[in-house]
Length: 314
Image (cartoon, rainbow, N blue to C red; front, side):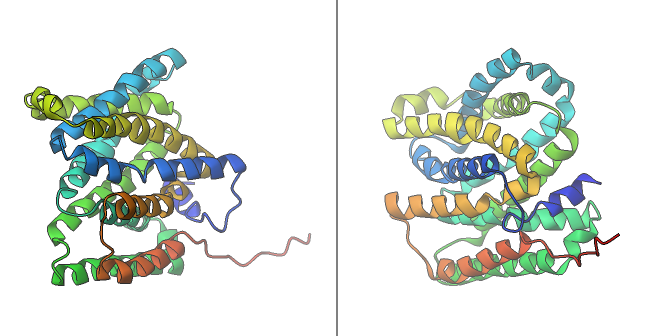
């Protein structure tokens, strides 16, 4: 079976039997990846976007590369370096810049909600590029359509009321496109490569990419940074990046890549809650109208259509 078909088969968290380990990994990954939007908002109080991405990936690589070397995961990752770099580009280089820059202008909760569109783009990628007919089944297709209607409704209402600028919404949506492609790359080309090696090398690559844009102003930013912002960057690097990615790769191996992307259910709730409770972010009319539509879309995109059972007699 092609990897694309396997991914869509796994877009069914509610219909499939999941092991206890899978549930634990799903919960941890969802929470860990619901945190970044909150901590990005705190880090932006003292650091520029390139510096946040650089520090986040540098700290992650600093921990994961030695661990990968000790556990035998570094050499396989280096051998598969072209695909590791592709993974790093679509998962981190573009998305982390886009999300961080967008959060200067939109709420952390809205950023987390928009990332929930990842499963919709996964369906689109499977249908258009991998020619997977299962992506055109009624449930995934209707879920994708309803979900996008929810996003457009949210953005449209809040644009009219002046609550959000569509440009920054588009930036986060583009990040979601990258997030939908990265697990497919990992599943097809890096399935047998230890996760610590893949993530460690990817983060080192991203840190190198961002170093020219970060290092010139980083000393001054560190000198003037608040303790909260420094703590936020450390959490982003060690918890929301290094630990979260290792857990996510374990989750992919346990339940499949597309079912793993449904952690957006959890991380969206975490992102919205943290933003409202600790950052005083407002619940807009667009959110009230858009969230139910996006949720329905996720449920449909994540549901497996039941196929008629053949008689097992004989």
